[in-house]
Amino acid sequence: MDIKNKCGKNRLLKSVLSVILVSFLFVDASYSEEIPLMKIQEVTDFLMSPGCDYMYTLTFCPSSEGAQLRELVKDKLMRNESKEQILTYFEQVYGPRILAQPAKRGFYFVAWWFPYFLLLDAFIIVGAILYIWRRRAKQETETAGAVSSKIDVELDEKLEAEVRKIREE
Image 1 (tube, rainbow, N blue to C red):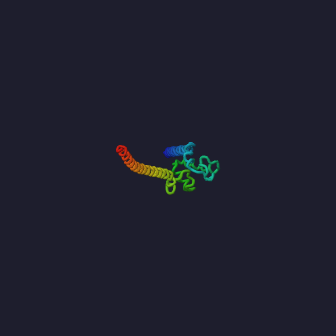
Image 2 (image 1 turned 180 degrees about the vertical axis):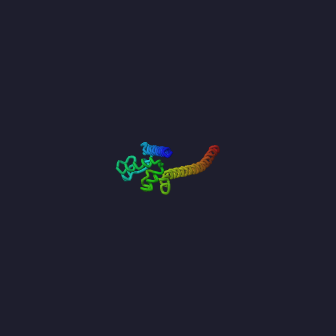
Image 3 (image 1 turned 90 degrees about the vertical axis):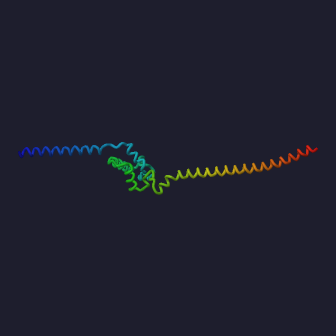
């Protein structure tokens, strides 16, 4: 009976070990899947490369440091980190200068909205100028109308006086 128990335990142990081994193979296989280049570029397009003095995005940087950072992005994507998590990591390590588009908070919030405020101000200024021009034009036509009516009254009086003189003759 002892031999049967030992064989049963060995079989159980072998089956448990084989299940563990197979599960490691599947975990390893999922990790070794290739990340599509498009997914990597989605992240690297938003990062400036410190290896290229922040002149190029990480996607187009030809330096070796740029290649290393692209590999780091690839590794983080393979670990299923989101784009926001990766951008936050790089911002913490390299500072806000590494982001191709600054975050919309603090001073950068004003920088994001400044062009829209400038455009709104331009519309307000143009509207105010047009309003003033229309008001002045209306005032000028009113004063010109008053002057012309005054001239018309004077001319009418002179005309009537001349007509009276002609009738009296």
